[in-house]
Length: 445
Image (cartoon, rainbow, N blue to C red; front, side, top):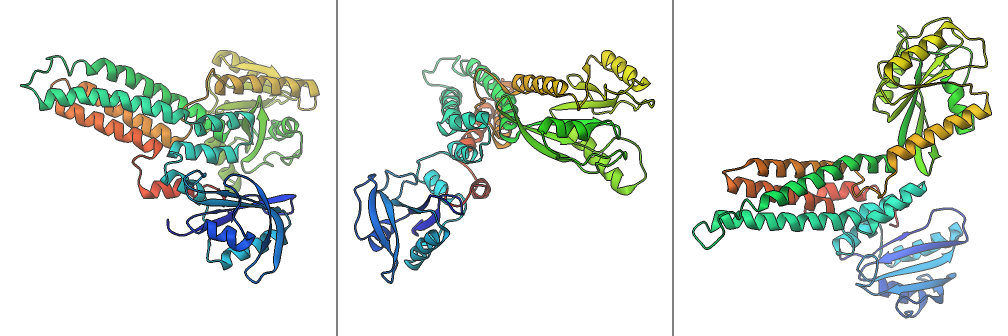
């Protein structure tokens, strides 16, 4: 990292203020070239900026951060200029004219990671904080940026080091004055640890849902009222509604916020057997989305004379909505209520045209989302990557516990568990993994 990078840190477009960041060994030279002199460290100073040909760029606030006391750990600077596109463009051109390089996505945070200012889990917290759309996502990202997962991982690793020392003492010094039960002392440590790690891995799914959104699928036969209900819940015409069955051919995902949590509400193609190629593909996608959803709202047209059939994807904990209760009752409504009763799922008669019904359903969904994603504490692990590494560590520890007689094999399993935990914070991580993670960042961060 011998080159010096720069990038706008604020979004493109007209704004009151724009920030352009610089990091690397030539940061000081860039400030001197553009602003004439160096401000006091970490003190904002007004400077008139000029390009390489002496033409004025803007009157700006300039901040100077000598390394290692900066975000990246390197010498760094920030230029706070007026937010017009011409001003930012002139400043960017001037920095490029000094031989500085435009940063790649996530390169500032990657340098912070490589210089020991953040570990990998904290860097992921930065990305999540940038992407946060809801209060719950913001809180979770702040916890991770603050080092919650890193602190838990450090405690687990310390326990593994203690257990490994016991195993290695028993293996390497069998004839020395080492207590005979030294290896057995590691067992309760590992048993407690594997329970904690497995619990964290299970809770990681909750963290993923907070980040990505709780998924609710509207499923049912064609013309059951799914699109009308979706539009009523989100308060806009997100899906096309017609009297013709099978209007919806693809999955229509609409984000919304319930109880402070992100929710993805999906209208899906009507479930029925069909020889029409496009509709059949829509039904396949509908079933796949519903299968992976956290909650399914099974809609049945309560006014229909036709019994629609029970979707295979509906399961315990889902909700049966007998729709169109403002129309005369047909056999389908009574059938659906009986099926729901036998399955042990809640059923309710609703109409998307009734504001009180829509308000009740929103409240019911909010309670389900909060129950699923809320908790006394935010999850320590929040990504599939974390969950997979925790599962790997737990598997290795269970293998170690099963090695009653071969202590050297148990010690190796403990070592591999520690390596899996180290990959969470990036102490050991392939270059390809780092590249994939930081490529998801925006330019300037």
